[in-house]
Image (tube, rainbow, N blue to C red; front, side, top):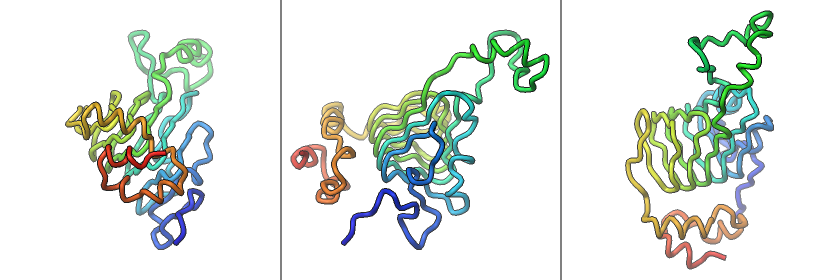
Length: 211
């Protein structure tokens, strides 16, 4: 039996709704790890255009390996932000001309929250919205419809608007073990060898088979 290729755009030949993002995405400001997929019955191939919005600045969207992104997940990038330096938040600069000349320095000086970073083995549910500069830890779960405005800890489960921590999947000690094991960095052959433990085992059992 063959190991799925990380370079196969359609990992499920009979289901065009599921795409691996690494071979799909071409924008250098979007970095995607191997085997991370997006599922959408209508617009899976349009992830860059429909799901990464306002990507006008220097900030990057970085998503790790083995992440599962459900239909309608969207990332709002820092280009969506309007300056709040004064009374008005109207973006005069984008209309160019005299407005642009007089306000360019204000627009360029707007604060940034930096890159948006999603760790490895993260599950982001249907229609979740990730705001600029958020960092989501390894193994986290984002509930459907969540609006994530702040960082999510490793192996945390968050939900709501604004999203808040609902529970931790494991104890702090187990999270430390899982972060150290970092199975997502293993060669795919070793992942394949121990895929049952990765899917259904405990942190201790996974640590026992770690390289």
